[in-house]
Length: 281
Ligand code: DHB
Ligand code: FE
Image (cartoon, rainbow, N blue to C red; front, side):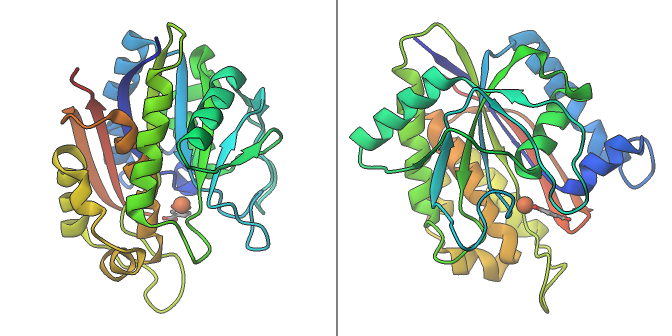
């Protein structure tokens, strides 16, 4: 049977990708941020997961306001990136895992979730920046990826409690997949940030840290908040914690070991939280 070996949360700020391209990792602004990742890469190097189920949001590349699936799942053999408005970044595509994608889709629909199935979809910084951070030089070390998109752009957005439940159903699907494969979960985006409007630049370190505490011990407390509550506390893009909740839901009910936690704020406009959680079974 497939096994979930861990869950990683990380921001997907596009400026991080630019900093890597420009070799700015060791500059005063970025040093603390980039110091977070080597131990996680080491863990990935030791554990060698076969598949990453990557929860992200599409910021408008494939799914703009005119067609916005609430939940979408990649069922493609590979995922290319594309031009987000600054030219195409020449990075290799990530490889898909269509058998597990379809298994998840079938399981979800049997269990009353109805995601959009995407057999041909490009991915944006929500997926490419975490991949670049965790597997440097675009090697990806042979890992296969299943991107799962959650609407964080257009109201009405799914309730945080629904994204948590959606993640739980995906976790159940992975655990009953009849293949001896190791799966790592990635929850990308967040934490507090707002990119435009009068409250642009808002950050809330206290709330971010509370969310990281609760993500480990009692994620259902986070799901008590509506999206409006989240926006009030952490800015318009705080809703991206939906991907963290889905990731944590997929890990299962037990309290995971928090192997690592870091928080750096701000990077660009964002309070950046990073956690490595290991399920205890
Ligand atoms: C930033 C953060 C995001 O989550 C995003 O999608 C784009 C930009 C930022 O802080 O600059
Ligand atoms: Fe984002």
